[in-house]
Length: 133
Image (cartoon, rainbow, N blue to C red; front, side, top):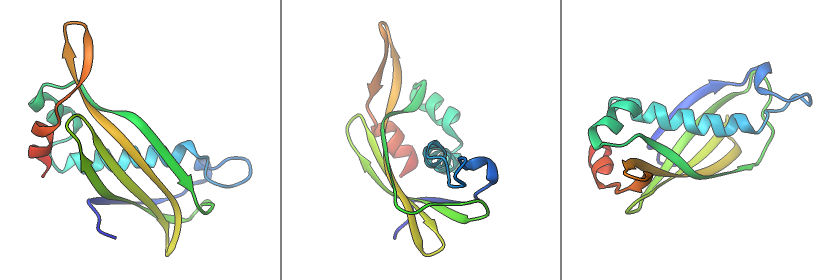
């Protein structure tokens, strides 16, 4: 598995539902945290958006597959393993490992939102890609 970026995390009691397994929205939060931690290497989300005239690199689509339960005190690693650049989108792929066990997988489709006279729209990704490649 070739990482673009990864983060380590210890699952806490507060991450879990009454059954004692990770409450699924937390996995989406860990994907987002990994993405923003990756951007921090390049100055962070806000600084990058200012450089390219955007208001945010936001979600357009997200999905996850939950392979194995995660419980309190599990030490997990969230890997961002792929980036597929489109003209107006960036698709990121994630895997969550609990030791040697695959716990979850997922993807995010992000747009680079830029202001227009009528609101915001997904702008071109070329400038952002140049800053991150």
